[in-house]
Image 1 (cartoon, rainbow, N blue to C red):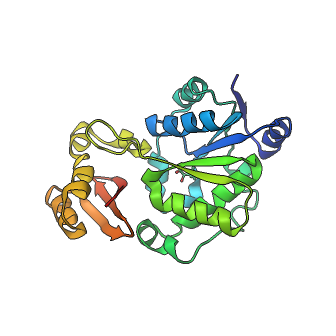
Image 2 (tube, rainbow, N blue to C red):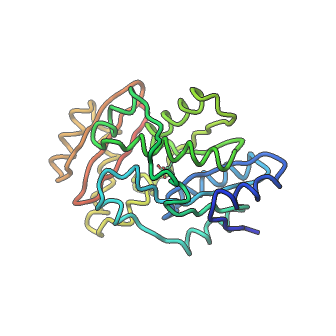
Length: 251
Ligand code: PAF
C-alpha cells in the first residue's frame, strides 16, 4: 500500500513507525522512466521506499519555467504504486518553507560554474530543499540521477560536509532510444523540437571538442548556454525554443 503524506509532521509520525532501511527518491513530479530507475534501485536496496513530489520554487530563477513546469499528479501516483513506493511525501510551499526562505544552504565553489553560472540562486534552492527533505525523511540512502550530475555532486558533498547520516547513490542517466536524456522538461517540446532534441546527445558524444559540439548545436538552431569539458565529463545546456535541456557524458 502507498500512503500519501502532506506535512512534515505527518510524515515524521509515519517514519517513526518504520524500522529498517529507507530509500528516498526526491523529485518535482512529472515522473518518467528515469525516476522509475531511481525507484527500482531504492526498492532493491532498502526495506521501505519514499518518494517526494515538490515543485520547489526557490530553485527556479525563471518564473516562466516554474509556471510551465508539468504537473501530472495522477500519473505520478500510479507510477509510484507500480514501483512499490511505501510513502509519497507531497507538501505545499509553506509546509516546506515556514520561514519563507529566511534560511538557506549555499555552496561557494562548484555551484558557481556550469548551470550555476547561468541560473543564479538555483543550487542554493536545490541544496536548501534537499537538506529540508533529508531532515524530514531521515533516509538511509537517497537516489539521484547522473543526468543532473552537478546537482548530484553538490548534494553528495553537502551530505559529507554536514556529516549527514545517509548515503547518496548515483543512478545512470536513462535515455530514449534516440539518445535523448529523459527529463520532465521533454514533455514541453513540440513534435518538431522533440525530433531535433537528440542532436544534443549526438553532439556531445561525437564531436572532438566541446567547442565543436557547441558549434554543431548552434548551427542546428539551439541557443547554447555552454558545452564544457570538466574532469572526465562533457556538460551541455542548450535551449530549443523556450525549453532548456541539460545533459552530460563521460569522456
Ligand atoms: O532533480 C530534481 O528533481 C530536484 O532538483 C530535486 C532534487 C527534487 C530538488 O528539488
